[in-house]
Length: 193
Image (cartoon, rainbow, N blue to C red; front, side):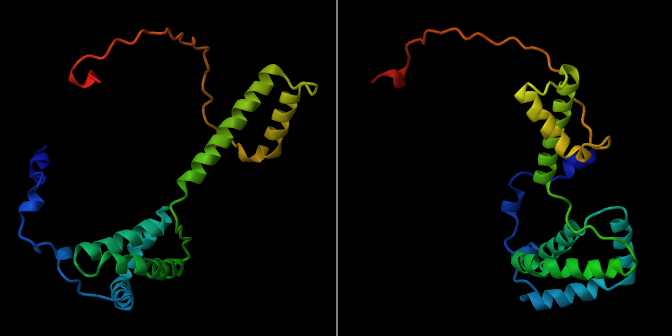
């Protein structure tokens, strides 16, 4: 609970001495080549690779790890942010090769959230369509039901029990009736024309 009071006061950074933070000073390393050499020498330690291998074995993607490593270099004033962004693929590649030498499969990307959202929406549509078709029956004379059964039947293997979502219970909601309200005449200083 006392940590709340240890936080910096708003505006405290504006009262600090200029150039007191490491990232406000000129960097120690200016080129991508120097930064790559720096990180490869630092990360070539067996203990570091062992710990990162355990993390990757648990399913942690490698890209956020590499981003964290170069951001720490930026915060310590080792290099600038642009050099860090350019050296990130080198860090990722080096760590991937070192960890895969242990026989561990490495996930590079944490996953595309937009693709996951799209896939979840498609699965939700298919589940709702299947539920509707089960309740109403499939009448091939009805073009709408025929189309739905074709759409659901094409990629039926995508909707598995591990991906199933809870189907929401739909209740018929009352549609709000809007009444035409008379607008009151504007009042005040700004209402004058």
